View 1 (cartoon, rainbow, N blue to C red):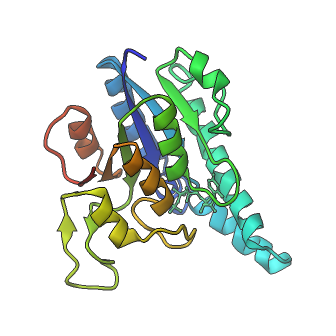
View 2 (cartoon, rainbow, N blue to C red):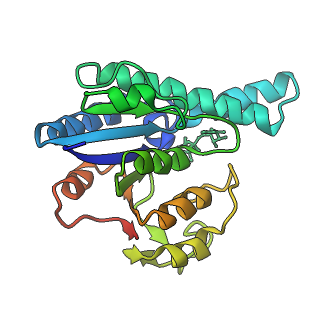
Length: 230
Ligand code: UTP
């Protein structure tokens, strides 16, 4: 792949914080199209956002929902968001979304500037898929866009003295997030995905996706606000 490729793990909380945030999506589209004009290629993995939680809550009122059911609803929410993105990027995006990071036949043949992927099977996260795809495409940079500005040394919602981290190595990051995956934990980057990213020598940046000017700076190689994990 000759173009400079960036893998983006796009948090569902940005696409569907409560309702669909089309204003965010519109701005995001502009930044990505700017990036394409500058020669970037993007592999975007979409999260699920509130859609999953709404279905899970509704389902629980009607019947029994176990954790695998919850995961599948989550997976389908990520897929809906993936279709949404590939639709709004129709001009630039590969027509099919990837739903299996171990079957990349269609992606590997693709010539388009945007490839969109979604959730696979229960017990995973889209962060992990982002790392798997980065590995297959030999990409070393992943941008994790969510609604947090930085990684903190402890949970900022619980501790008033939590400190912002600008740069951190994988082993220190793993001490903060632990090493097991808990779907409800809401960590900046999934611990299982972190393990693989560390092993592959990848750099993951944690950025607030709402501040798209900041993301633009990251793409332009300028100083940006966020956390670099490497
Ligand atoms: P994510 O947790 O990756 O998406 O997937 P997200 O929306 O970015 O996360 P938040 O809500 O903004 O923090 C949503 C859910 O879908 C299931 C998991 O239950 C996960 O919590 N999922 C996703 C899987 O089970 N397998 C996958 O491959 C992907």
